[in-house]
Image (cartoon, rainbow, N blue to C red; front, side, top):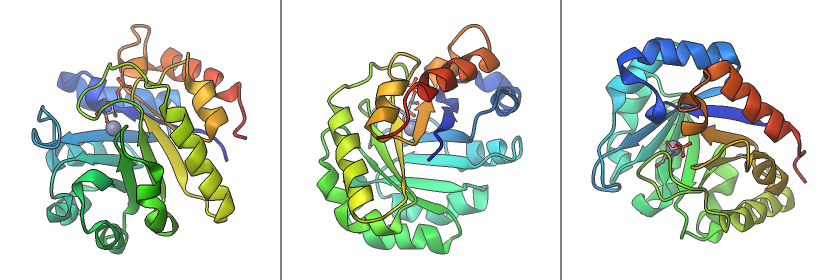
Length: 224
Ligand code: DX5
Ligand code: ZN
């Protein structure tokens, strides 16, 4: 599978959000990652359907929405109406996970499931056949700019092995602290999507250079 780059707008300049989104699209990003936080599942509040609608209007790329909220099942329709292409719910926040993922698919979005660092991959074993993406958090959900947690490589490998054993093709996305220094290792472990915020929007020398650096780093290792 080719490695995809999902740029997280949490690190973008919100006074120029449209420009920032167009810049990473021009630079070759594959998805625009939108981090929704409610101040309950995570300490801070960030953004909601209005931000998704703004991103939807600024790009043709898939809008990859990451719900770091409690009771996500209450908000699925709102994010579908706002234009989300993919919708990820956290297994830790969603007791009726199988049903929620089925409803996300029925609303026309790619169903995705996210795991916080302490959550074992086995907790999503029985929804693997109905998800398009497993989002492996490589930092604690809640903020950009945190350091990558290397123990998560074992989780990525375990999920890649289950994917092969079950003959499935879901994407494994890694999210948090991803940059040129760890992209190759993540890909070699089985990741097919790199989510990056700070490494792209905080790079200092512009989106094109940042995206090119990440792609070059990721290209150094083909998935096992
Ligand atoms: C963290 C978010 C991540 C984060 C990634 O809770 O889910 O998507 O924005 O940002 P960086 O790449 O800065 O770690
Ligand atoms: Zn995220």
